[in-house]
Image 1 (cartoon, one colour):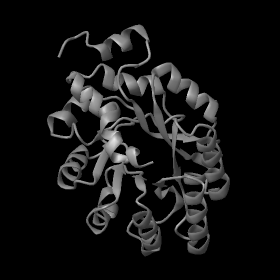
Image 2 (image 1 turned 30 degrees about the horizontal axis):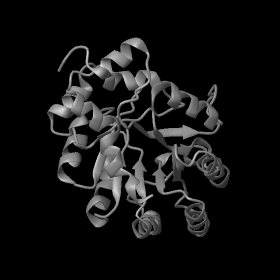
Image 3 (image 1 turned 180 degrees about the vertical axis):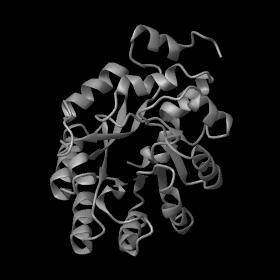
Length: 264
């Protein structure tokens, strides 16, 4: 790999990536009750995307997936996707502990154009709780892309679903944050499982290690904005000591398949 490939050149000069498709697979919109976030509006997100050269972003709402304000949060994402249909892919969020409400909300969000599902155990139940069954069934019937908040240990709870729903695309969040070998194992074992990269720490060589372990076709770049800094997360890929082809895959080419973008 050249030390000054086009990706590192953009990183060094601050120029936006304009030569390849780039997708942020994991970001957020809306306020969070327990934490002050400076600006998590869709306008702020799109400004960041333009500055970095990000073509699309997949967003869920913080009020829904963390605070449990399901309808309010989903409305934020619905509005954002409606305003920026060519830039945003929307994740819906439901609470499995309220099955009737979840059924209505999933149907509503589907009608409004949300084509992904974000699940986060901050809402309470483990992923292997039977209450999730109708949610997985809806996702499977509608071929949603499912982003699962994981931190190593959560993988054991969700792994049975990878085989039970082989037609679903599963994205395990925060690869490398804990138990990195587990992310490699599931990424290589299951054709329908991807691993995303957002992490608040940046251990040297993490991206290179994942690629070396055989995950170059399974890694998806993401920012976790507005929790984390978009440029900082992008720099982890731009300056990684991997080939330009591998960077293109992680930044966007893998996402084209994971999100079935040609079908939307």
